[in-house]
Amino acid sequence: MNYLMFKFVKQLTCLAIYTGLSLAIASNPVFAEDSSLGIVMRRGHLRVGIDAAIGGPYMFWNPRTQFYDGFELEIIQEIAARLNIEPRPINIPWTNQPENLSSRQVDLLLSAREEGALEIGENKGKFIETASYYRSAQRLLIRADGTQIKSLRDMIGKRVGVVANSGGAAIAETYNKNRGNAIRLFSSRDLDRMLIQLRDRQLDAMILDEPIAVWQARNNPNFIIVGEPLIPIRLVAIINKDDASLKKAIDKALTEMIQDGKLEQILKRWNLWESQKILKSATDLPVSVLAIITPSSVYH
Image (tube, rainbow, N blue to C red):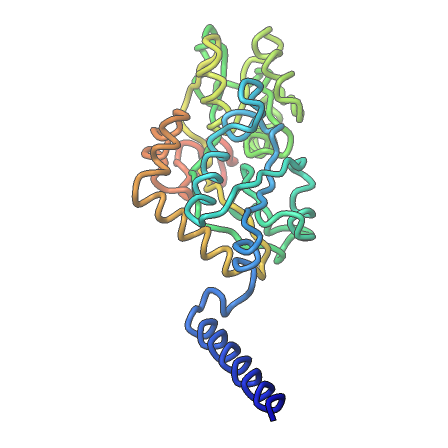
């Protein structure tokens, strides 16, 4: 009799627990969609794919602190703090990051990823994007004594360095395609080497992501930025397509950071806030830029 009573009470307890969990899940649309956020919360840390080789101010290894540094790291840390979990940046070569995310070795990528960039080729349809945390652009970096260069038009016949497969490379390649290879283009993945070539007058200019250009001009008095921002585009974090609850949580954290001024505070610390006021739209292309990179017949 005691055994039967115990069994009956146990069944009631299990039913109550199940019913309570079901009601909790049903009343919480975040957890009703998928378990991605719940998995991260139970684990207690957020695994973020980064690439320290991108360099400052995105993400880089700081020998003084013996840890990563950069404005993207600070954003990662703030997001994790708002979720009450620990941030865990995992250094992965940039080109390998989508594969690592797809195989769930990391929870998201926050590593200078442009909006829509992974919606092509073999990665199409695999991932979703968070809200934007930064509006970037391409900028012209020259030596301080090379002030005769003020725009893309002034680069005709000049030696111009770009990072391979970057936005700057796309601009220069499009310009050359439509203007008869007017720019003497040098493309490489070795940013440090090209900066040395610019310093040593082997290059006349470089087209770089705005954060990198600002970082270089800030830390090297021999370099300056000229001309207007080119091709504004949003930077976003990347998440697996089925992880909707995690995306919602990241979006909420980023929205709060914008509203309470924390994101502005981070960007100001890295001298990146002024550009955000200039780049009011991440989709509009200045008419002057269109006139430069498109064929005259199309533009007119």
